[in-house]
Length: 416
Ligand SMILES: NC(=O)c1ccc[n+]([C@@H]2O[C@H](COP(=O)([O-])OP(=O)(O)OC[C@H]3O[C@@H](n4cnc5c(N)ncnc54)[C@H](OP(=O)(O)O)[C@@H]3O)[C@@H](O)[C@H]2O)c1
Figure 1 (cartoon, rainbow, N blue to C red):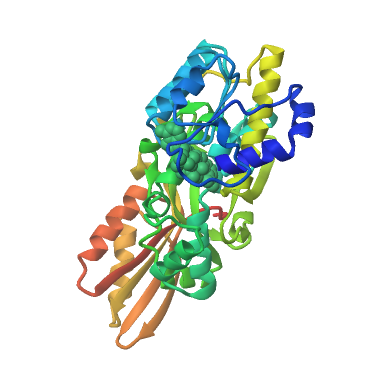
Figure 2: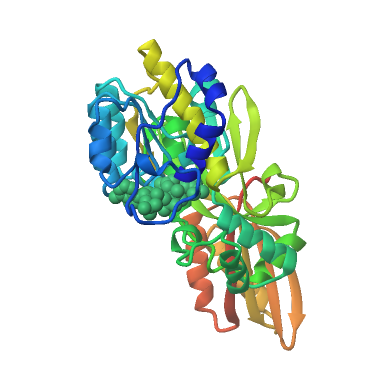
């Protein structure tokens, strides 16, 4: 992405100077390997392997961190802030770590901006919208598709009826998934973004590791097909919502979203974030969540803000935050989809529905289809407690006529 940023800074130099009130000159570009081949527009004389030296250089006014990961970035960002230099970063892993959370205080202490629009949902102007336009709004819930890789995979599974592993291979061939896809498909990437959103939208400090996280690897093509048949799309969601007055539910998991919901129409690698506020009502921001140029566009916006603020002797608003009280997973309230393969014989349905009832899970609808002496039961519940659904599933696995628990998915965005 650094290469795309350099391209934009070169191509739009005159316009960016007007916008920021100063001409933006690239003072140096830190890389890890000076011998690596670079795009022709990268000025070779600006490259250095000494990132720390560049940060400390008194002629450098603003630092843009696009290295990624924790080391050496945490030290570099901290040093820059301690020197009073604004930092623009796209590093969600750093920002969602306890060390990253602490960097906000360092920034405040030294009167330097720490800006990170590009860290959540790429080109989508989300952080600034929450921090500034919606700053007076009481936000109830922010939920979105903030990982393009998993949205691409689930979209293709729905549209082509393809299996997870086949679509993952296609995504890797298209460069939409890493060779090691763990960070995306197990939800780590989205969890870091959810943690950042909890801070920006709700004013709570949350670490990415504390986010309830479930990946998409267990989703079967057949469950995506059933979901579609029941009127839902399966989407990879990050959800941050109020749970009472002083607690938040922060979570990342695949969910069934009603087809009528705006998030259900967000296809392929696109991202979108749906915000529900007390006075503003419902809003949705949509766009490209990754890729060099889209993400670099968000970095440029922050860079201009940082320069403007520095010239004006001010910083972007950064209200104090408190540690979050997170809703225990077991206490989450949601509707659920449960599919079961059972032996097709009299009394089975009654036995199964009794387990739901015994665990306080009320069934909203049930569909049954038979095949070769077995039947498949598809349940949609009313709002239920996650802990009660988990005990229902545990108990169902102990019934000998239940051949297999198929899929279990939360349903989000519906109206009960
Ligand atoms: N790409 C996206 O679509 C996207 C979207 C949103 C957020 N982000 C975030 O943006 C950051 C960068 O991602 P990316 O995809 O651009 O990564 P990338 O392609 O791997 O680029 C990382 C750059 O950092 C340099 N680097 C690595 N270690 C270094 C060190 N110790 N000192 C100095 N330079 C070092 C690398 O140098 P060499 O060129 O010599 O290897 C490379 O130029 C990450 O935090 C990522 O999460 C990326």
